[in-house]
Length: 329
Ligand code: GA4
Image (cartoon, helix red, strand yellow):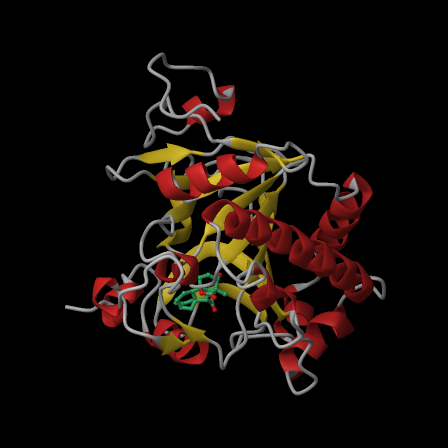
């Protein structure tokens, strides 16, 4: 893991194309999931950045290509077809509007619940409009993403000596876990506004435990360092990026940081990303882990259920600091 290298390094020539973002000397930590030091590297990255890249993850490249192709086909459907699966409520197809409180972005997306909820008519409509094999590909992909989140959380637990050792991973493994998959399509830039960055997806932290992101080879994702600097994340379509969410920040009592991130679109190529948000069951009580922080007076956060946190999130704007409501004074 190489962090904050003193010498500027060439990350990717595309990175320099974004005028809002200076070339950055920061390298994104890379974790080989099969390496015996992976757990130490993961914890270090979660503490320092709340973000890292995963290689040797074991997911077949064909699956990634297949899902990407199916998603491209969906987004290429006539607008009137896609609109039958929208507006997102929060599941289903959404265009430009993100969440219920007025946030917008240069984006269209599909949001799907991992526990395919038969009552969600919007989810059903997505699959009705899509190619027949889309649902199956999505299901296989979600299983793989659940597995990556489980592995990451098991390694975190091992390194931090969390007891019982399935404490974190079981939250994403159980069938009640409230996880979802988002497919984001950032269309090519309009020729009429060639040098203006559009906000594709505004800055925010993810509310869940961890998110696992995969994109095509198009730039746009940026993360915010602790000092407030935004840095480009060079795209890599064969790897995954893991993002620490608010829930893991709370459970580690702030030792891990949920990383602020955003997507700017300033490109002639469209960006396609899929993100799996690994969340706990709705009724799960979230609080700092007593094996890490035995004295309640040292807890930085009040206890809440995931359901309460989610409701609060859906009352907030994308960029709000949602954890503030649950901090102890
Ligand atoms: C951000 C992370 C995930 O994409 C998401 C988003 C959700 C949505 O788009 O429906 C939210 C956003 C996200 C946080 C604040 C609320 C809820 C939009 C919004 C303004 C699916 C999630 O879980 O929280």
